[in-house]
Image 1 (cartoon, rainbow, N blue to C red):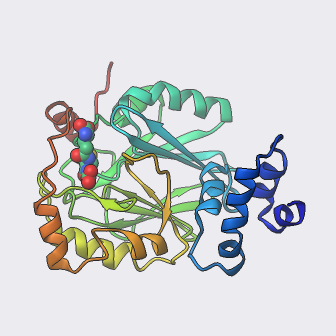
Image 2 (image 1 turned 120 degrees about the horizontal axis):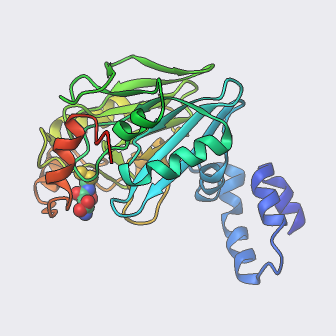
Length: 291
Ligand SMILES: N[C@@H](CCC(=O)N[C@@H](CSS)C(=O)NCC(=O)O)C(=O)O
């Protein structure tokens, strides 16, 4: 057991090694995944993904934290430059702004930009309230979104924070103004609702177009390195992250032909998001500014 543990990445080895009363069942499960870890059959195996999700630093100097809002099942992401303390918040939610402000203060980060991956239909963005609370913070959204923000993003733009940056890739289809944000080293992609884990954003309202979404994912996301971690805008099944390689192999919608994909999307028959009539008008003006 101990020799196996120390062959793993240091963070994982520490967490396994430090568990007391390690049960036989867990031990058997670990042995089961060991061959995949050694041979790297998958671009990134599930055990390693779990360790990456909870890590605070993926690459030297880049802080990362995944946050969750349970009513709309939305992920907010905090990325920051460890040295300069400049930070970017991706897809903040109105209801969790206080939590995010507290975290920023505790960790000593200076929030430069709150960026929305698109004009959300299921929750009100926290960008407006954050602007109210943090002097100098700027909001950002795609110029194709039709929504107000301090920074109107276009393909190829870079959102800089300290020595780090996020590269903007336009990935329309769920809405016209959807973007995917990729870290400078291409180790992480924040895909918003364009690509979800084993799924994708719906295309039945807000300029949705399934052919456009298929093209966006295949041309802009599936061309990233296989091991690039995929961090989606939502998850409804308890998953936190995936990889480009995994989604290319296992996504039940996007591994199909474009015609099959269109057919799947037409027949999703999802109910309308509960907050849509409140959320869209608020998000067009960058969220609520006073609460
Ligand atoms: N029940 C939720 C809304 C769920 C939903 O429609 N999610 C959207 C993204 S938010 S507009 C989506 O694209 N889902 C794709 C899917 O396959 O589930 C609510 O009421 O908020």
